[in-house]
Image (cartoon, rainbow, N blue to C red; front, side):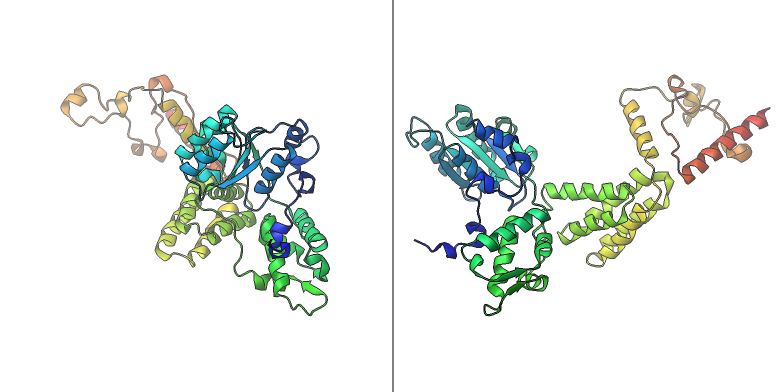
Length: 432
């Protein structure tokens, strides 16, 4: 039998009961959903959704144990349809694989199962042959088929906060069979928490590696930020540019710019760049944002963002980060307006249902026949009049008086509104 001390620290510190789980109080605290299910002795099929290293597998095992159910774990990374069907048949009461209760079948990375594999699970779940607990780092709304998803309760697990990571580390130092006998002085708790990004397993791995790297003759063994930095070969950046985090961080960046917070905008953009997001994708989003959220409050924003896109495409990383940094700060600190964004949306919504003909005076009478039919008749050329303006109708008769664009309360748009009011008043005085 293997020596328990040979097991990685994260494995040795795996909780043995739900009460030992640190974090996830929204699910496991007294009165919380999963705790209520356990108290009732009932365990339905579940999907546990959350980042890696925050306890999805452990919680699944402990839930099965709490209701006295057999537990069978599979990984979607190395399980084929044939192996999956064998497990499901073993769970069928007619097969006799489990004598007293249908098993809990845990599927790690369930989002990696293809449609055929997910469909194979569906029949067993519907028949009650198994209780399915799926774990996924992806949003199950996008990665699990609707039929299976509708038969499972979905719970999101949250990354551990710094205080919770500190509890995990303290428990390891004081209770682990190996570490408790060492004189460890941990001064890098906050640094480990920052690098682990809410991942308890990663935090424990860093601690273990640091202790193994330290001079065993030193007393105490000081685990400080310098030691942690030296054993972490690369910054542990958590970013999946092909998954949900891609959309989450893009959203966070855009909302930070919209909310006029340049520091947050820089942070989220930096996270994306360090995670490998293409710089030109970020630049394209900033071009859209410049028009949608700034618009005529500062027309130069669109010009600068468009110039940045072309510059990023021609220069590339890492220098492109400088250009993106300049632009995102400019956009975040600019006056904001979504008046033109709302105006075009309103116009397009009406255009979906309205088919009013173009008034004859606005049509171009390029042939004799067209002219004989009244095309262009009555149109007044504005440049022939003072201030290059003449009051005439440009909307269909049925839409006279319709307004799409509302001037926002920023300096530039207010100036435009005042100019338009002056223009119309001058025209009225000239006519009188």
